[in-house]
Amino acid sequence: MRYKAIFSDMDGTLLNSRHQISPRTEAAIKAAIAKGIPFIPVSARPPYAITPYTEQLQTNYGIICYSGALILDKNLQELYSVQIDPADLATLNQILADELSLSINHYAGLDWFTNDLNNYWTKQEADITGLSPKRTPANLTKVHKILVMGEADKIKPLEQKLKQNLPHLSIHLSKPEYIEIMNKAATKAKAIDFMAKCLHVNADEMIAFGDNFNDLDMLEYAGLSVAMGNAPDEIKQVAKKVTASNDEDGIALVLEDEFK
Image (tube, rainbow, N blue to C red; front, side, top):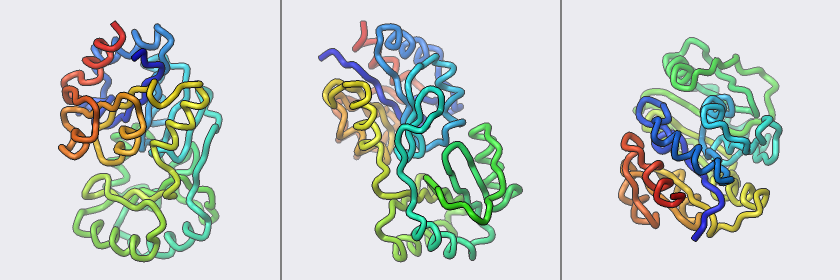
C-alpha cells in the first residue's frame, strides 16, 4: 500500500519526553513531506503550542487542535469547529466556580484563558507549552475545550461530579491531575476524516500514530494504525503495528520503512 497522508498525536508520540522532535524523526518526516505526503499533527494542545513544531518540520498543511474540536489551515484560519454548547458551558462554569483552588482553563480558538494566572498548575502548563494565558472574561461563550488541573485527590471526585451532571459531554482524565472537557462530537477520528476529504485521501491510505486512549478512535479509523512502544497494552492490541517508544524514534522507524 502506498500511503498518502500521515496523522500523528504529539505528546508521547511525535515529541520525546523532553517535548522535542528528535533529529532522526524530523528527518524522516521531512523526507515523507518531500515526496508529497502531508504530515498533520493531531493534538489536545491549543494552536500556538503546535505551530512551533510545524514550523520546525516546514509543513504546509493544517493542524488538528483540542483533540479534534478545531482544525486550522496553514494560515491558522478555521476549517472546522466543534464547540461546547453555551447551555452546557453555563452549567460547567457554575459547578467549577466552587473549585477555587484548581486551575480552570478555557480554550477558545487561538486563545487560552484561566481563572488564576498565579496557580501552580497554570504556571506549569505555561512552561510546558511555552504559552501565556489571559484571565478568563465573564462573557466567554465560544469554547472548544475546558482543562481543569489540580491535585489528583481533588480532580477525581470533580470528574465524577461533572460526569453525573453532564453525562452527554466528553469528560475524561488525560493525567490523574488533568480533566479535559469537550463536546462529545469532537473526536480525533472525525477530525482526520474531515482532513482526509480535504486531501482527497481514503482512510486506508493514511497512517496514524498514537500512544494513548484519546488516540484510540483515530487508530481504529486509519488504514495503518501505529501504537508507540510507550502506549498501554490496550492501545497496542488495537493497532496494526507497534513501533519503538517516543524516546526511541518510533515514528522514524515506520516512516523510513514505508517511504524508502
